[in-house]
Image (tube, rainbow, N blue to C red; front, side):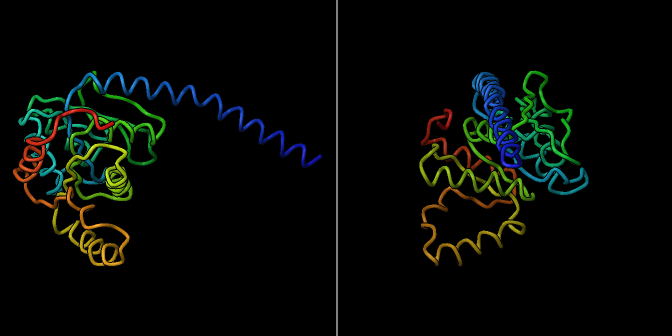
Amino acid sequence: MRKEQHHKGWNEIKTNDSWALFKIMGEFVNGFEKMSAIGPCVSIFGSARTKENDPYYQLAVNIAQSIAEAGYGVITGGGPGIMEAGNRGANLAGGTSVGLNIDLPFEQHDNPYIDGDKSLDFDYFFVRKVMFVKYSQGFVVMPGGFGTLDELFEAITLIQTNKIEKFPIILVGSSFWGGLIDWIKKTMLEAGNISAHDLDLIHIVDTKEEVVEVIDAFYKGHALSPNF
């Protein structure tokens, strides 16, 4: 009897999983339709916990403003902290400001600087991440936590394995990121777990000018288009 009850519960889960595919498909269709119409954008990542008086918040505003002035839209995760700063900078420049929102405990709420017609809501992290890597012409990675690292390393992995086109990955804040990159070079690289050229697209910078210079230099030799 107990075995039959377990099987019944398992079958109910499988049925629910099957129906969930329609919701997942709907998120993909909506995301693809809206993002494909927006044009070339750069994604800005960083901590949702960064306060407005933090120097990295203002730096993210300035970087996003410069990116928008250079003709790119700005994509963020749509929430507070660095995400808000990114949308705020794009908004100040009169540029395209996109928010890919997701409901998270304690920290996620839509920020007010996203364009009204460019705010997308997601229930699934993996669908949202596809939108970032498909439609971004570059990743600007400010100091952040596990979510920021997740986006960073997924992008590196997809480029390394030729699943997406190459694009520049810019780490802002040498004092924050320097130790991580040193560890990658001294430990992962020396152990033979990665190749030296895997790090070619990663740039560590400290100013808004450097961010735009890296992006512009890359696209002198590459077309602006979705990454897969």
